[in-house]
Amino acid sequence: MPDQVGVREPLLTDDADAAPERAFEQLGAVADAVLYEGYLLYPYRRSSPKNRVRWQFGVLLPRDWVERFGPVAPGISGSADSWYQQTECLLRAPKDDAVVRLRVRHLQMQHKQVEDADGSPVESLRTADGATHLSFDEAIPRETELTVPLAELLDGGRTVDVGAPGGDEYEPLPGSAGRIVRRHRELRAATTVSAEPLTPGLFRLRVRTENTGEPADAGACRNEALRDALIATHTVLGGEGVEFVSLIDPPEALAERARGCRNAFTFPVLGGAPPESTDGEGETGPAMLSAPIILSDHPQVAPESPGDLHDAAEIDEILTLRTMLLTDAEKAEARATDPRAARILDRVDSMPREVFERLHGAIRSLTPAASSGSRTSGRSTGTRASTGADRPETSAPEPPAEARSAAPQARRETLTPEPGAAIRAAATAPHQELSVPEPPAAAHSAGPEVQHQPPAPHSATTASAAAPAAHREPPTPGPTATPQRPAWWQEGGDEGLSPVTDTVLVGDARIGAGSPVLLRPRTRGADAQDMFLDGRSATVAGVFHDVDGSVRIAVTVDDDPAAELHGWYGRFHYFRPDEVAPLATTGTPAAPGRAHDRLRRRPQR
Image (cartoon, rainbow, N blue to C red):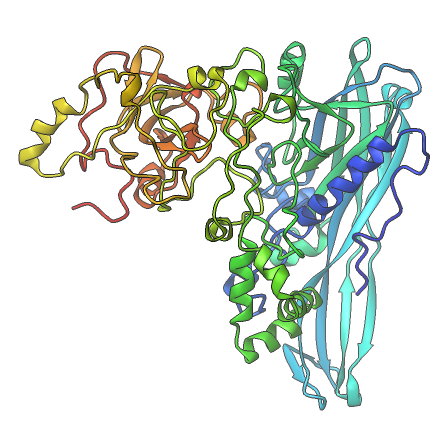
């Protein structure tokens, strides 16, 4: 089965403007990861339950099948089945000769059926050479490219066919033992691209892809209906003389326009490398990826990753180790399941030691975080690391080799500490100093004030006595009383930290575990999923400290039906102190105890 992904010609062939082409190249690996996300999961065997329920993202089915029980409810997440997908974004084009280019990409299901020598379909067949062949659902990658002047999009737009032909393929098996028959149905789909002017040089671009086909059986089960579906549908946008505006972090002047964009079952993010500094003006870029999986701006695949494992949210090292430990019988079944699974096994079995060691982890930087004011104007939380000229001239000391090799490697960067992991802190309060070189004074004054208290006993007889002590204001230390906290990779780096009892000053109120808060994600630079929680009330589960000296407040959303379950096993949403507002501005947090200890790791009785 030919694999069309990764062997295309460059999108831009002229040398007039190489930046858009580079942006598309950088998006290629991420777009391919989106295309095959969840295609086949560890242990990569057909018999695994998780590989019997597939195709969960960007699925566009025939309308009559989707709406057989009523219209679909639009949302930006592509994990719900739909018959259409719509992208809207803002586009800057100062010149009249601007050109918009896009690629619509998806998978087409192809059923692989094994037949014996008599032509009868079978689930598996073992040939004389010892190979086993299994019936399974494969997929063919499809893409359609369109280049159109912006002026034409303003004058009614253009519609292009993005479907795919049907067909049958036959592959004889050795020794006339039988054959493999691959069949795929014709897909009918269309993409309409249009634009509308907003202000001089500013436009709203709309890309709408629809499955226009008829289902073979409107009452068929989902697995059967998927044969008429576009799977993992997404769109790559670029052009010449155009600039796309981030919907997550738009310039202040375009924030209202960005909120007016309506995206259904997909969400667009900027591609390419992130800028060194936005100077508080928001972000723009030459390319966008509109994907059914919600991403942040400038998504990238970790450079240490040697290949796709079809599970981009998992850690490569864990999956690689587990794949290595599969039995010979399990590996044989995986190889017989799908050619992509066979390639994963080949890569793991032949992986050089130095490549595997790189999977163990990578520390991007140990430079202390400077004031966030150097990153975005008007912000003063000091939680984002500075870059370029904003970094202090001194650099952090290199951790020992064992610390470097122990850092977990993640496929996507996140601000969320792993539940249950040891809490490491580089800095915790303005009156404490790091053992790493000092950042500028502004970085110290920008950080939130954190108060540390030892965990209170859970005993009913001691809880009341411990409560007043948890809220006494600590004495202000003199110049000679500043304690030295070890760096996070050194022994004792997390001593004295207690997420359940530590508090942080937000405005005039001190909040900690048990405090009610209102969620207010920052308007620029926030994670897309955090924006959905804007204005929701939540309860603080703990106050965490990051290795860069910043503070994160762990919360559970009050109206989340699974809030208690999330609290039980330690799955929280994390926000900076300036992204929450206390709902109770008087008093102090409740004394720590079982009533609000949402960091517990076992059922409470």
